[in-house]
Length: 163
Image (tube, rainbow, N blue to C red; front, side, top):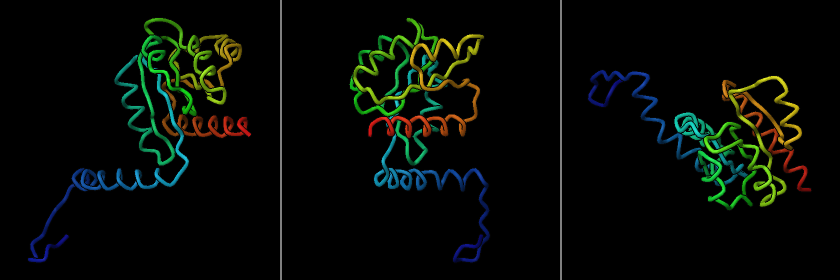
């Protein structure tokens, strides 16, 4: 690249991408203002995983992580689930099984859909999750694209149930 003075300017890929990230964040924010944004609740006790997932989901133009928590008690204290579209729920929380929240969530919002993200895909899990009225199950090692696609699929299913 050349400057007006004719001096050469070099830029690394990382400095260019860092320079454009704030602009990209503004553009995503503008798009979110015009779209119907899916409101998500993350229930995950591993803070690093939860924060990384929230960061990536918030970068989707049609998604917003509305709330996050790391335990059953913390989640129950949040309340306000009426406007949540999809819950991404860990099974093994420090104070119990994540499925214990499903009744609370559906009591506040019958159209909410629940996606279990778990690291423990043991035999019989899918059958137990069907009995617990879970809408989807993914392994935590799933690619972000797969998680995003499943959130969108479940949200569209929840919207169909609304009509």
